[in-house]
Amino acid sequence: MILHTQRLTLRPQEQTDSPALFAILSDPQAMRFWSRPALTRLAVAEEIVRGQQAAMAQGLCRYWTVLEDGDAIGSVDLSLIADRSAELGFLLRRDRWGRGLASEAVAAVAAHGLGPGGPTGLGLDRLAAATRAENRAAARVLVKSAFTLVETRADVALPDGTRGACAFYLRRR
Image 1 (tube, rainbow, N blue to C red):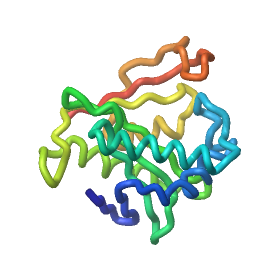
Image 2 (image 1 turned 180 degrees about the horizontal axis):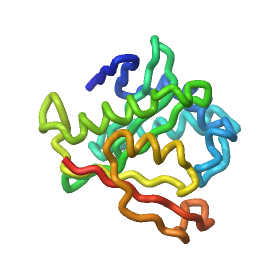
Image 3 (image 1 turned 135 degrees about the vertical axis):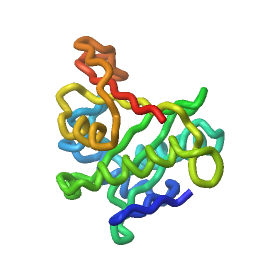
Image 4 (image 1 turned 60 degrees about the vertical axis):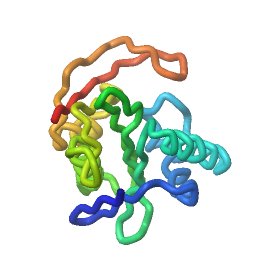
């Protein structure tokens, strides 16, 4: 499903989006709140996209590439889709930060996810999102998109084996 906003087009992710994703995932500044270091090789981004494509084919998630005037500038996803709920994630190229584009893209995907099942939505009842607690920009995006902070935990185990503070958000239909 292709989604449109005032300034953006969000289309299903394609393998050819790997270089655009690598531009974000290789940026240490963009990756500072992630639990993995910035990528150093395009081949790793290509493998990530292959895995995401396989998960999409199984119905486990949906990934959209965010386009501004035809230029791929980010990604928004609904993952872990089960029991009428999903987890929302997003990333945006650093030169597009601070313009409200992430909020616009997240709002479109959230509306689609929580929309009635069928061609206009996925019929989900609940969307969850998690951020590093110090990532205030991501928190603003979520709040602007009608997510509510439900909990902040000071000592969460992160995928890279470290521990850190995380904030958990929820949006219901």
